[in-house]
Image (cartoon, rainbow, N blue to C red; front, side):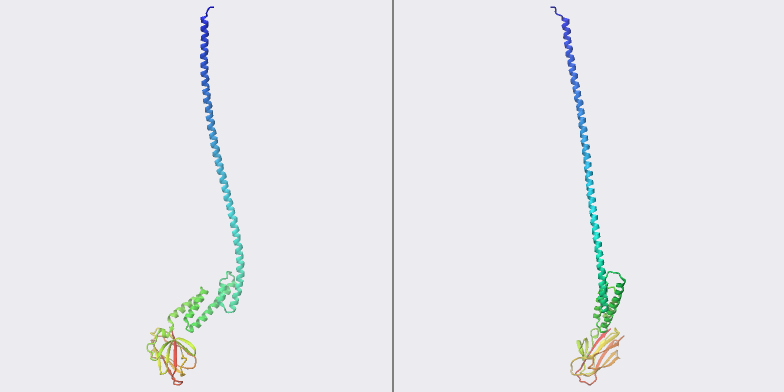
Length: 334
């Protein structure tokens, strides 16, 4: 058998070509696979990024939605609280209005009752109580105002009358205290204010003779705190023993007073009932001459002493009724 070298070589070349083609195809397949893997990786990464973006957007959306819902709930709660406060305020206002209405009704009833009581006090002459009642009535009824004005006028007149009586009796302190008490009841009274000022001015210039100008030469006379004349007590008096007559006392007025008021009478006690002559001199001039009856009430005299410096008070028994007799002079200077 003849060996065909060409044919064998051709066959070998064919097989060698096939192997090279196979290798080339395999390499191409691997390259294609790698490219596919890179492509899939890119797609996966793209999908992953897309998914993350979607999740982030979703989270942000849900967060915003939650905040919106939370804010809406807070608004509703605030609105509910405001409405509740409004209703509570309306309820309180309504309660206060009802209470005010009841108070006005009570005040009207109370005012009418006090008005009736005030009329009764005025009728009984108790003007102070009437003023106190009417001063606290809140109504501005013309009837109340007229009655209050009437009560005030009567109360002021009543106080002035009593104060004048006290001043006439030389009870200056009591008079001032009465006016001060009246000012507490009626502080707006101009009459009480002026009256109090006048009494205070007088009080500075009024006082007992024995206190303001004690005697500087009493031979048989002396100062006594209290004596009784016809059972009536007199304080800060000049006391004269008329066993030996005349008896006198001297007082330096220094020209500072305008009036001397004296109460003269026989002092209780002692066996003598002799009457006495009372002589009062001012700077040597006779200002008063009166006979004092022993068994009668003390007698009051007023003697002007304007510009008088030396005052002499002299008492002398008339000579009848015994020598054991004593007289007193209660003097007030102003």
